Length: 287
Length: 341
Image (cartoon, rainbow over all chains, first blue to last red; front, side, top):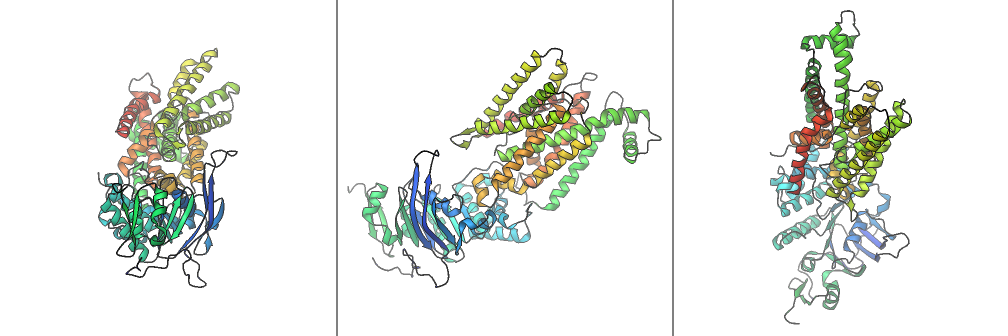
């Protein structure tokens, strides 16, 4: 495999870190077990996983359904407490942050939950300013400016005064992303953000995320089962299978044909692409 | 309808003042109407004299009709209307269901059952009745909340069904208690169950007002959190909301407000559903405005309903709950059908 045209950030299992400066995201021996009842055997376990990501990196957690991707993401968000191991953000352990501080540093874009009451897009984005506000939180001009800038960043400025329930799925996805950006997070987590988008929308979203990551402030972690997108856009991937991390590193290192065939139970073929990134093809006829 | 601009504190104050003014107008009109009609200047003079303690020139009409008969009733309607509306708005965010309301959820029936049990055991201690109504309301919200879950998720239709069934079960128990007890005033009880503001107040309205407004104030401290909670519980957590604290505050406050309302006026339905809904249509769904607007709007709505209840077929009076149900039930059906859409 050839080297990439533009120098990729060193995204191996142990990326080089400036001495003295902790990595943006440090995950060490993180594990989890889900018990339905106290005395029962765990229904689902996440075996210890470790990786780290630097500022400005786009990391994608890839795997088939029920492989533990979303559990891992929820552990990173601090919403779920790990069984063992820990997560550090800029050298600070996650469990030492209170909810408000955590919301100032970590933003999460979830699979969509329906809104019960009508709300305009800009009101929705303004919710991202909540962790910075006092009790009743009437938005300041600064808050409004930040919300509008966040909408502009995702190409959604024109949506500001539309109702959330009247815009399309793709437009809604942008507004949800804008709310996360309005939080000005250090770490941006997205759970299957491409699920309801067509291929054009998927590529556009990933382009935006890659540009956001490259612009430097946030480290972005995306959970997806879209191998093709991960191969094309991720600086680093974590491949999950049945609650285990099978590999961590650049897509070209992790996406091995035999492994992917096994994990996804599908006739996949991996080819080196022109840009040094692997290309993943589906080959049903050739079998 | 195009979305409103993001909410400012100025708009909250403006709308609140506007509704307060409307409340005053409605209250004065209600004080004028009845078997003896009294002119606005007379009502005004009477209220000023009562407020300043200047009773020297007070007319008999003022003392006996306005102050003794009509004013307590208007104040009671104000208190009950505000409490039920805020309780409804709170439950709607807590349960993420625009159809939630103390009556529909069975909370009013739970409070009524508690109050009746307390009355049977010890009819004289008002505070005991209220405490029992509060306990009944708390237990009912808890029960409905757990019955309304499917696959670990709160399901809005299961929740409504759970509420309706709980309400009918409690009503049956109340009927049983009433029927098996000899010598009780059945018509009075039936009126009270339907929701009625004509019974004399068991304790000083001032104290009730204080408790109700403080509780509403308590709900208001969570207004910004309720906005986020209504948009999704997990998302609220991600945005730094202390979700369990907010839910506890609203759960306790909503139950207390319902219990207060029920122990003084029986189970008046649909105010908690109708008023927040209309306020949302008028002023948007932001809880920082919705809570004061619902409190004042609820007061206005119930004063109007009660004035109608005592004047439409005068000299006979209707229970005010019948008035609110006549207006509220069709709206509930409309909302339900639109939601199923």
